[in-house]
Length: 421
Ligand SMILES: [Mg+2]
Image (cartoon, rainbow, N blue to C red; front, top):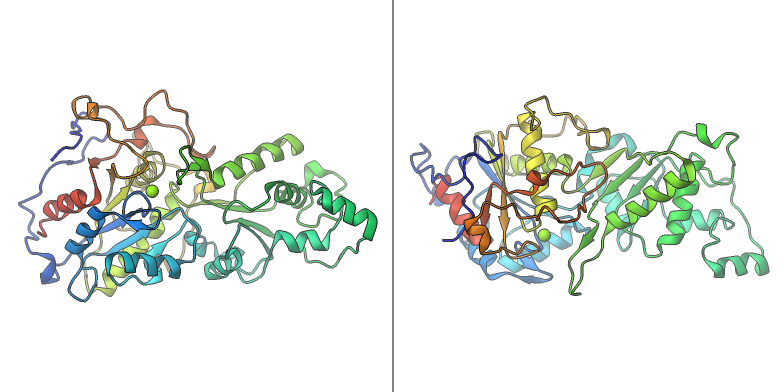
């Protein structure tokens, strides 16, 4: 078995990376319905599949985790920054591996916005593409509108669309001054035509959600709350070069807003990997599943499999820092405003003590054989930082607790470590 051997002297002091934990008292196997106190989280693309094709190691891994009826024997959740309807993704994963996956087991980038209950009844502009209103309603947002609704209510706003300029000039227009004030903006994913959305979102931000009224002092207008889901700047698809992700749209919005208003854009909440709220929601989800499976012990360990060091691994390591409440200098760990986790009565108690980041080499991250000999981090020091503005760049955060070639090797490692083989 080839893997990076991290020495205990590295920055992750206190972790027992390669211990087999073979003397653990649990000492039973999965088929005995062992009293399991750990959960496993999987990123999907690059870990379990590439595009719509499941990976062979993932099939072998799932064979180890499922029973004859296709029920998983360990509490598991799937955590992806993609943006689909959870029921569709759950069906796809279920079909790939012949397992039963309820939609609640799939966490997309926007899913933790379910916790932002104070906004669910407010008039919400939802930005994204297909299924965006279905997704927003699934999250609990009950009073939603789209950029097309804003454009129709205020036909003079969109002058970046030259066809609209001609239409207004030749056919006239009717404004709807009774269109309700927008209270909150929910950015689910990048829209289709960025220029229109950028213009109209900034109009709403500068006017407290009523863009037909010019404020007497624009500098004194409080900014509308913005919830942004998925900060990935780029992603890998079939093209040979990475493609723009939602983070690229956010960067444009932040830059334009600051240039125009003179103030930095402030986010009410950032949601999706690598933000702590997503991992907290994932812990809640696997804890709930563990309880449904009949396990009584609180979960103590989470294993997070990801292929992207700067998203999956950074997030798992940030969550580990959050639950240990310690920053790298040993001080109390304080989250910035945009990454605060709301206290919700419906969340299962936070009991996990360690979140292990498991990096696989079947997706974004390409393992170099030189890494075997040198204790190098997966990201080169010379690499450009693609993370979001509200997540400080720290090279060590993209370093996994353990590298495995594929998820099957990782599952073997965990089952052995947890003495459930
Ligand atoms: Mg991935």
